[in-house]
Length: 316
Image 1 (cartoon, one colour):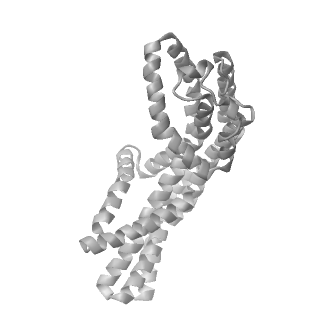
Image 2 (cartoon, one colour):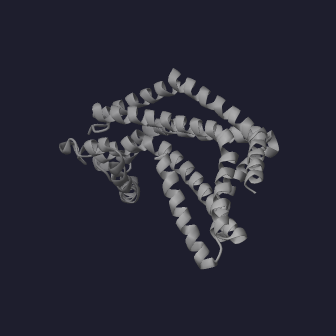
Image 3 (cartoon, one colour):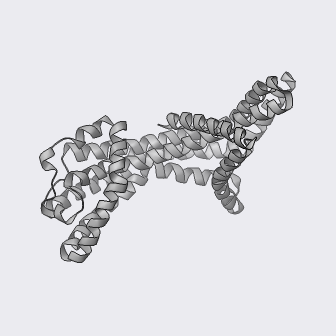
């Protein structure tokens, strides 16, 4: 998914840059949009840099990203017990239940059903769970207080833990794809203006090398850390969703049985968060980010300048 997002964004952004050049006679309008998007991240770094320094600012922000990617889904799912309290409240307050059911149906139409369709395309196991046990697709018992059936409720919490790792991978892939496309196209555009057709290839090549020089010295460690964190989050999602499916949880018509299912899943989440695998993985990931932040702050720029100086002197 990460590599696909880079490739798709890169291709789409190149096409948009071409159209921007044809319409506005310059790729700068779209390039400035890219800079504005990335400035949102840079602004956070600058704000934090004024308090703790650049090295620690980069390290702290990257650490937040990997913790979110790896464990945030688990922390969010600890709130599943609130669904039980909500059901109890619906039973006692009919007027609230009417409003809640309307909101359930809106959420189902606008959010969850589109996600179901997307997820079925990406995950073959979801197709299996979605069409299994048709007799259990019911709005009887406690589910008559909801705007969805018991199977739809189970499906929501089946796909929910995948969302945070997926969003993290998609956002990072989009940012890298946008940056790479702008660097290469601007190199080609400036080279064409300066030296004609021969400058197009040279400008593209120099900007591509420049992109690598300014990202790879620290980016190798950062990228490995991010992908490891995403893999850890996906590992939890696989285990959690498999437990829901194999044990046929969150399908019960009685509130007492549903409460037991939720308690079982809550205990499983707590075990995951306390497990040695998670703690050791996070310690390893954070250590990589600490080193990467130091390289980005003190080493990357020097490497990039030396490589580019040598390259330009050699070519020109």
